[in-house]
Image (cartoon, rainbow, N blue to C red):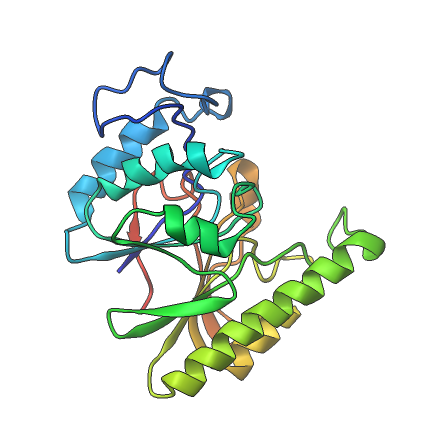
Length: 241
């Protein structure tokens, strides 16, 4: 089982895995962030490590698309790569206003989880977006608290259903936002994951210099794994099992 997040794709038409025209086929190039032709790097690394029978978890920021019709170009490109793909939302997934519609749009071999779960390779995979943490710079109690509390509830709903249905299976959580930071060493996301004995939490969202402060490894009773695309040098990595 592998993971990679924050692919930030933006194809503006159907494209193949190769021979992508950087000038004509890309709606929002990532060159400004130093991610020159990053889709080629993702493709080559993916083909190197992922086999058809593997699972790849992608926690958020898959596509820049504002509408599902355009996101489909990015989904189709990912679908052409080997493996079963399990996706969950990030803060830039503006097309994901309806879970039902996203699921109707996704190609086969791709799944969307949000406040629910699926099973993969004998594990429970539960997911939700997450949110900024109380006390972080930029936190606005009047606007952020409601979203934060809702995301906590969505994570608990997913894990509660999963554990009720499959109490014997180990649990992996996909978040987009980190559940802790150096400034906020604990959170309700961590509390819920501890309550449900989650084994590993995958998260993304952090880029560039913020990688240096990311909390990874054994922490707070579970394993934290940062899987942002650029943090991984654009190569899917094995999930800590």
